[in-house]
Image (tube, rainbow, N blue to C red):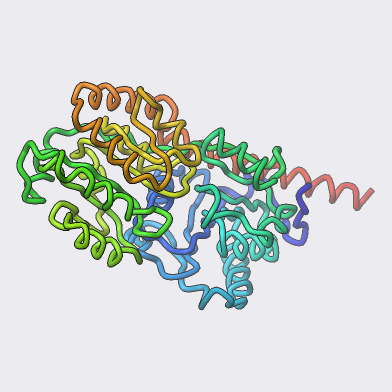
Length: 398
């Protein structure tokens, strides 16, 4: 059951026009979920929806980047226990006459975003979740708000099952919308391969392994550094490219120095040319402690780059053993080194995995299908809200 919000009149889409959606997120650093959101915003049909972004904290690099294209609200919360965020958010939603709120990720934004939307009488309330378990799991307070939530968005079939069975969200409220990437931007490029190596001061034949992920503890970059140390002697010309920034940067730098691989690991920080960088790789890797369906993996496969990744969440739905890449156990540096080393030593397998990977993304993970999924879900829920309000109004006058 979903508790209805009848204190705000809901008019038909024919009268309303494009629906105003607010995506509520903590901030917009260069990360998988944030990049995915930016790509989706840019493809949404303005005749159907008008998207906005609400950052509870600062805008972040991607928020600044899109601020000239979309309305971006920020700095609404002063700290973890700042309950003043609730009236600020609800007033903002009321003032903007928002038709749908979609929180992105769990934690504070999922709680405050949905509660504020309910208070503001927003017709559609949904939560998009991009990972499983710690640290982005759904806590008790967030579960309390299930009755006021119209939809929980999963990014893969197994993720949807997880939200239903483990997080205990009602099955009829769980909707699977697969992550998608722009396969025109993310594609194979020999030109990028040569240019990126020149930029890094590397030889044209230098092997390059890369990761694109915010430098946060759950992404577990430390295991990448340890894998680099284990491969140092067997692959003396191997280099590593780390794209992204965050609080773990100093820890990564310190560990790389301790293990004497600092000259092999290139920390590029925040970059806005991800398609160019990813297409230059021999192997893409992701060593997270928890994930759902990482968009960075789909981007790599779209570039025909094979993937070595931890077997967590729904990763195995895109990194398929002996088809698109190799899986290893979470927090297993030796397993990671073995997986990456095996791919680096077998060029024909890398090419086969890369080709199969792009075919998989084209078939199941396009950006267009993801955008259509979000637009269809929001409009369907909004139309249902209209019907329910009309029914309640008719019952009241009967």
